[in-house]
Image (tube, rainbow, N blue to C red; front, side, top):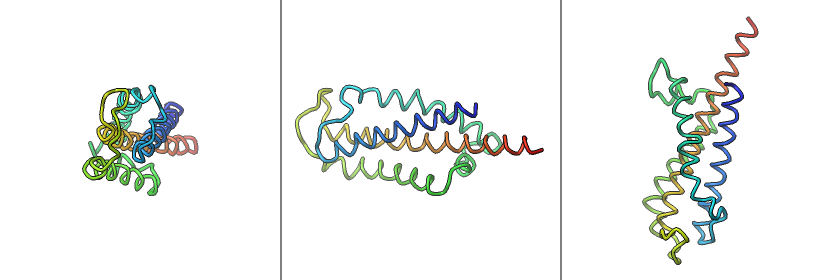
Length: 151
């Protein structure tokens, strides 16, 4: 399980970097750097990292259901801060940046760039949250394994 959590942390982080890259390109009005692979970001986020993150969070908070402080206890404070910033910016972007995004022609999917921008901002936030949850679970298990080994 230890290596599986490390793998999910890495997969979540890669998704975060890819969605951040796409978001930045869309924000300045450039073409989507992911091309046709873009349509797979949401399913990847949902099935590939978010469902495992919910399971990991359930394990991390088994005594105190839904407590974010407990779930993120294995994350360094800078990582938690970045996660909150990504989530806050996604909400800010949805309401304030999306309406002023470049209004160029419709992309291949037929959705206007501002709609894609808001969607990508939320995907970016959820990848950030999943990265923190997976990393926290990985660290908690690492510490538990060291304590068990030293006894």
